[in-house]
Structures are given as C-alpha cells and as structure tokens.
Length: 257
Image (tube, rainbow, N blue to C red; front, side):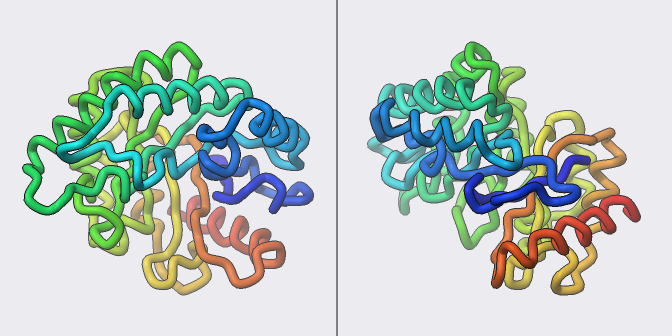
C-alpha cells in the first residue's frame, strides 16, 4: 500500500521517506468557485510540489446541499464539472465525497428520499468523472459529522446503486474505529474500495501515536487484495516533525497486519 497525507502540497516542502503522495482539499487546490486564473496558480504549485498530488477530499461546501427539499441538481452538476476538469489538469485520480454538511439530512426530511437523492447525484457524476479520467469515492463518516452514510456497508450500498465504474468507495479507519464499524465491513465491500484514510479514534492522531491497533482494518484490506493509497488524515501538533514518524508507524501496522 502507498502512504500519503491529507494536507496542502506546500506543507510538504521536501520529500519524506515512504511518503508517496499528498491529498489536499478540493477548495484548497481546485478552487471550483474561483476563476481559471486563480486555479492556474494552484495548478503550477501542485505541479512543482516535492511530493505528487494524487487525490483531493472535502468535495462540496456545506451550503451546496445534496439532500433535502431544495437541492439544485444542475448547480451541483456544474460544480462537479469544474472539479473534474481541473482535477484532470492536475493529474488527480481520486476525488473524495465526504462532505458531511452538504449531505446532512435536514430534520423532518425522509431519509429514504435523501439516499435516493445521493444516488441520483452519483449517477450524474459518474459519466463526468469518466470523461475526465477520475474516480469519485464515497466516504462513510461517523455519526458526529453527518447523519447519513455512516458505515462502510451503507457506503457500499450507495455505491452499488450508483452502478458506475467511476463511482467507488473509501474506507476510513478513523470513522470506523470511532463508531465501532467492524473490519469485516471492508471484506463485504471488497473490490468497491479503491481508497483509504486512517487516524486513531481518540484525538484523531496519526495511527501509532496513541496506541490504538488498526491492524484489523489493514488485514481486511489485504484480504480483499487492496494495494492502493492510504492517506493519513489526522490532527498534528508539529506537522513537519511528526510526519516522518507517522509514515513509519503506519507502515509498521500495515506490514504487520
């Protein structure tokens, strides 16, 4: 598995042993709400980065709703078109759809209808992603961050309903550990999983910093033949000093799983 970190490319000023890529936010790198001239500067910085930029997360701002009574499917699709076009220019492969605020179901709105809305979005996004050679990955989030698609099983169901090769699934050991989502859920999802995030449940520190054992998750990933990207998405006290240790500690758990 290839180890990366969720951060802006400029935060990794030089190569770090064992670190293969960085994963910034959509707003930070692709800035879809800004003009092409603004993005041009971000693109140049990404191309010159010490570590390759291969994925982005935090797809949608909270105010651009994907569930509820006032969803504007055309506005969301137009936003997605800009994201995919710019992602291709950077050379990105994965776009993470977590966006807990965007997809949070408002009080009183039918949850079944909300799930249908998310599937409809994903069905629209799939062909756009294919055109630009990128993949959207659905990220299940813990219940403190959103109230829909909280488990890997739920994410897998949504992904299967979308039924498109460019719509796939992410497994995040932080969200799984925090809510008690079992490692077997990874095995059930199988080949749908094409991207992973990790951090410890307590304090969201890097794996290995707080003593939590995440090897069951990595073992499950190995069992499904996963050999892709694993991004450290964590809280840091001193990022430049802690990053090399975080890569080493994560590699230990992956290799011993």
